[in-house]
Amino acid sequence: AKDAKERAEAEIEKLKASVDAYKQEVDALQKDLKEMTDKLAAAAEATEALAKDVKTLQRDMEKEVKALNDDKTELLRKLGASTTALEKATKELEAMTKRFAEAEESLKSARKDAEKLTASVKDLTQKLEKSEAARGKVTADRDALHEELEALKKAH
Image (cartoon, rainbow, N blue to C red):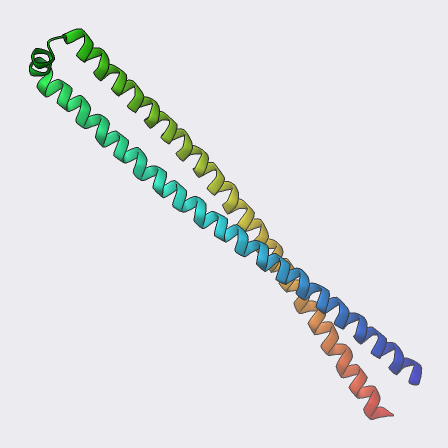
């Protein structure tokens, strides 16, 4: 009976150590999940900022195109050098188009990063759920052993 009690106590100690290890693992996973969530939020903010920049660039480009279309004749007359004015406007539009394309690429990249972070968060969440399930089983096993130990104590 003493040997059984000692074995049960040793098993309880092992289970306690196992529970502590699972708790540490869960804590680490929760920390990782928080970091990933923070990164995802930062990526979402960056994506939103890029989307606003893209919209601003689109509006600016539309205004420039409209101004060129509405005032083309007057602009050419005022500048006196239609070729120079047109080249300047074209260069400005090309620069705006380039900035728009760069912003669009940045937005695509940010979206891909956000998708990767979302997948990582899902993966961490699944790992956390598995760890929580394992911890629950260990806790149940520990409780059962504790009840057996108490029963053995009462029997002797």
